Image 1 (cartoon, rainbow, N blue to C red):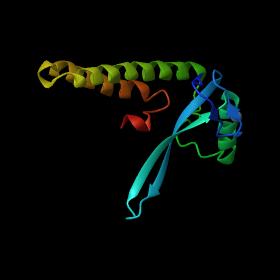
Image 2: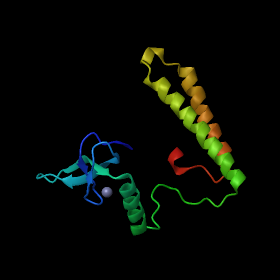
Image 3: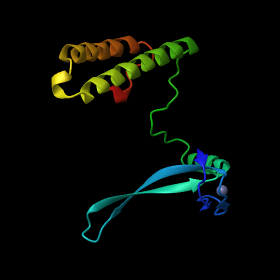
Image 4: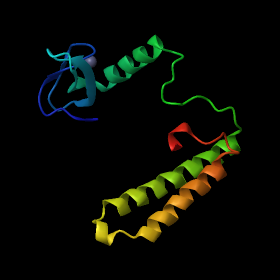
Length: 140
Ligand SMILES: [Zn+2]
């Protein structure tokens, strides 16, 4: 959410968003084909009043109530197991972040042993998380 620097039109209610008001800016992608029938992706911004942004999200969700595409299915595990799962997910996120940081360094500054070590942490976490709702698909 940010403050409107200039007057804009809300994509949802088509009413103006006044300069200085809060607004939500979303990047949208649209796939089309050009004249040569090659796929093309357009990206553009849509601006919403904060409340309109919520309303359009609710409408979108109502349109497709049972197609959770992001793997947010309820796992059917107890609260304490869910906490344990979340803790493992967080630890993995931090390991992934450290690997990315290492990989961003110039080749000759990369610590290969460290990357190998972090990689082995990832496989340990797979083993650790499997009793708590299974290994997430995105972990590969
Ligand atoms: Zn609006």
